[in-house]
Length: 518
Image (cartoon, rainbow, N blue to C red; front, side, top):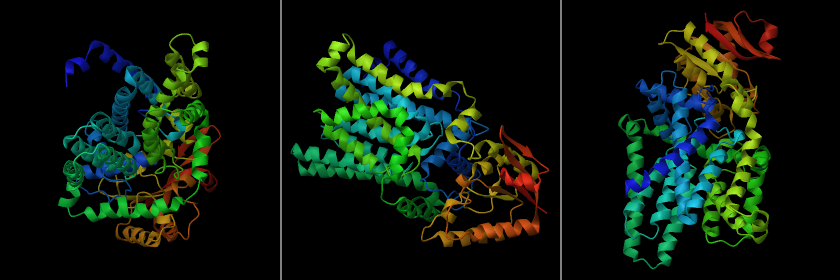
């Protein structure tokens, strides 16, 4: 590879403009308060840096790559808030570049331009929680790096591309498990294509073995801290075994997809039109892109959570790119647009994506948080609760948050009395719910927390329909016997505020309540 041809002045200017475009869409998000998933990752990374193993001490449904990423960021950032967003921005930028690289392979330089500038706002659709440093923002880089290797090396008979895809697949999988569906489809397509080309079976077997070697060795390396510490079972239990029950709760239906489409429609309406056009037009890459699109789609469409859709955006951008190129060749389009048809269709597509988000650019980080998540999620007040928790306890003391707001633990830099820093494994109707609930109660008995925070909001888990909640009753009994209320965050018409001397009437309107052990 000739680096001089890559790092030309023209390319450097192009990459700089692209990065500034991405930065424009994210500039006011870096200091946003953590949402609960970010808090979960940040807390797990923080205890790992203290020599305390996550999963055993913080129940986490994601594999450990996200913990390592947050822990790395915390080395350079005392607050630990900005660094994961910076890393997510870098990962997103590289993923966008890779998607453009793939586009160039199929559509040439014009395709590259279209893909990268369309994909940048697609990744940043507000209803998909794009400002959070969530797993999808990191996993799309190794995912689409694997696609890039396939796109450029699929005709190669050598084993090194297969080894590389094995490594990249493992990294992506260890960010989030559902990437394996897309990666599995990519490998099946690759094997089929080589079979069609009548590659010798011995070479095909060798390449598949190289892929599995890269995958297995990378998985083992990622899990080494847990293997050496004898804590591998906890990773398996939380990130893989429990997730089978969790995914089963989604059920089979189109309710979540309908909800997500209604949420996204005003941002993607023109993309949907272009996608329909793509479906009804003949094209060289139609089958392969459709296969890759649906391999991701079937792994996410049952989720109610918007950030799942981020992993779909790069392959969708490639489909949109092909649709724009095909549309530019239509006779009627050439009559309406005399010159640079691809450019003007791309500009219109960009405007359709950017116009609905125009109000985000002037918001403060706190205003942006409320715009994305609404008032019901206590993400803004969590910082205040964490500060109060740190002030009233010693670093060696244990605390507990009844709810799914682990960001409070991270802000306070205090360990939880229970590994269930997220309430959902304890309340969602899975076959092991009751077992986890009893474990949580036993942990609180063994390590009585010096302080307790009650996260009252529905999104935090309290109030969700459930079979029973002995844990909530146990905590309530302990609060009545051994704790006194010190304050809470009270919601009002014009916002909210922390109140130390809180009354019974004000407790009703509070989102977070703080109790101290007597």
